[in-house]
Length: 364
Image (cartoon, rainbow, N blue to C red):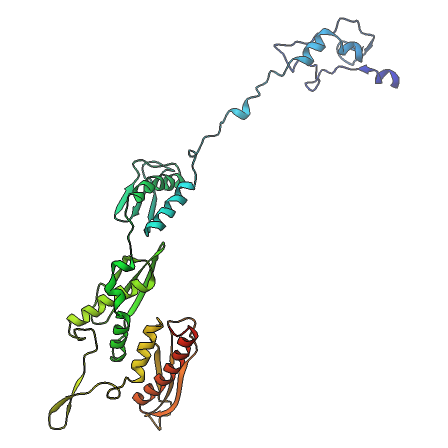
């Protein structure tokens, strides 16, 4: 019996049969093949089931037609929701090119991308570069597209702009005089006032500098948008404007030198007395000159009387707080009588140190 069943196919009436009529009720009704059944299988209820030889059943025309016909069920369900593009094709090349042009012209662009309140998931934008401002006429479906479109339009705008970098030969007065040295000398001879401050800026390959002095509040001298080819030229320009202001306000002589202080001496007589020794610069003044020559910020003198029993005995040192490579104390002094004397002795040590720095640089 097992040999018989292994060579026979028993058709089933359930929906799982590959030749069941329920699988294709309308287009491919299944009917028994033309060969007569070889055997029948009795059932408890209903007519008996027909048993066919496998090769005979598979070669029947109806079965062959059924197996060769593709399924009639819907196969396009995966295409029911086609992908929707979120943005058009874009490339970062225009943005990179735009930044290169701005760097060559010494310009700093500013992109502003904001969400469009009238169109969800869309973005508006503007671009400020130099004196001009570009605004998108229509919002874009992504921030990248908005930025790219602004950069493409900005390239043509920047190409038409003239370079804003000032050449050294365009500003000979700033190069001929040591304006920074004059300003630092004025500050050193007025230790009770805050020292001038410099703020450097970089815009591409160009540089700018702002200088602030306590004698004028508000706008600084120089400016972040006044660009030069080097930091030194930018700093000299800002210092020159500050020195010229001090000359106009009477703080400096007409040639930029420090105005001599006058003090009363017995009987009401008035005589001129320079700071330091007569006919020779003090150590503090020499520190100012060396710092200007080496393009260094002035040091800060930290002197204190540590013993309350002797309040006039000072110790301390000078610190180059604005120079990252010169963090160690310089010109340390101990137990010097009088603050002024302690400062001069400390300045003497600073001069010796700066002379060594100058020799290390090749005697510039």
